[in-house]
Length: 277
Image (tube, rainbow, N blue to C red; front, side, top):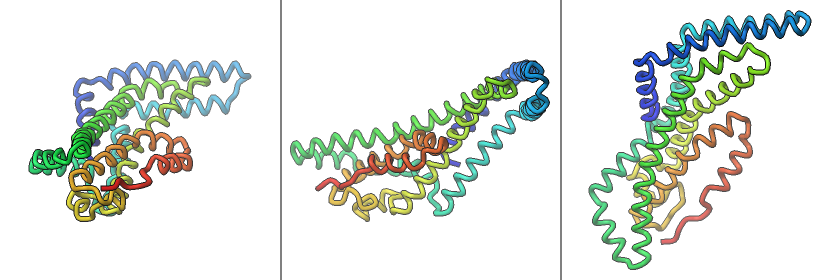
């Protein structure tokens, strides 16, 4: 399980420890009953629409069963997507690549950071600019990864707590769109892990899965050739940070069906040439 997925599981355990969802589910069951009664009224007002009534009754029954074991169902759905993401990741043995990169980056900085900065700054104005870029890059990646893990947990927690209240509106005509929108957002949230795993696999495929591989290759998948070691790692960290930052956007576009346009925009955003040393 990836680091951000572990933090989300901890968030779920904390929410359950305060019995928050049990209270929410209790309210949602009342809303569910009212929305079903409203759908019954609408069916009779439409001249006794038996088909619509049967559909509403089926939704009511299914949601009632889901609410009875809501926490388990939500965790099982999340666990299924997490398992799929890990299966994709395990195809190449990438592991939690970006978490490992952050750890390796910290070790490299603790061993070589001060010496590297002074050697770069000694190069004059150009060296000073490179040093600033290195500092920014070494801060940007950990902050981006931490924000991604935080918002993953926040997004998932909101969906977990508010889910029953929104789903309870599903049987009622005219309000079911809210429930369908919730389900779309739930799929987008689950897709974050899948996109993360795919990016990790692609990073592994270009032989950029560790600091040593990047330093030995002298590039990141052919980009940034000719850059010094410290600048190369900084540029690679910026590249990885941007990859993590666009995961929510990519997941949203993919789930909503904008796959082709998403690929085009992603390619446009990719660097087209490497910096010269």
